[in-house]
Image (cartoon, rainbow, N blue to C red; front, side, top):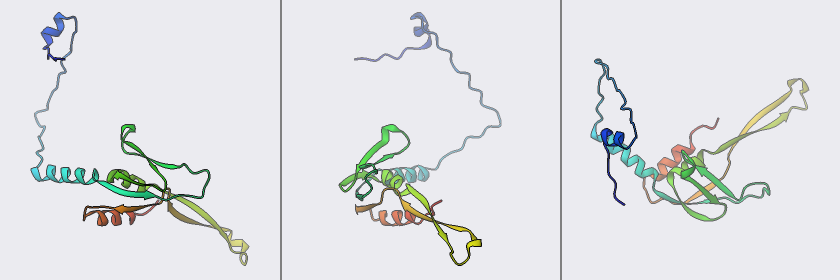
Length: 154
């Protein structure tokens, strides 16, 4: 199949009218230049996040828990379902989302010696889908994962 790019006059002859946008650039507008090193660093970070890691999501005794972890990055076209208890290769960007999937539950403690104090709620933080990294070939990977897991849970 061949493609032909048509200009506005050719489109008008075919009955298709295209309104050309009127873009006005203010006189005081400035153009910001991006250094080559910034783009190179962004490209390195993007390549790093697309590296494949070998992981295993832990099994569970909860009969109501889903049999897989559904991880979506940005939109539905970048979704993976990671089965529990199976070693799989997934991109680092999916591992990051999986690691950030944390929940907070509260335990209630009551002091029987001082009932006036009321109930004390203590938060307990845990991963929604505990997992282990079986293999990460990048030497920067361990530092990245440690920094990610040390972030506070809210």
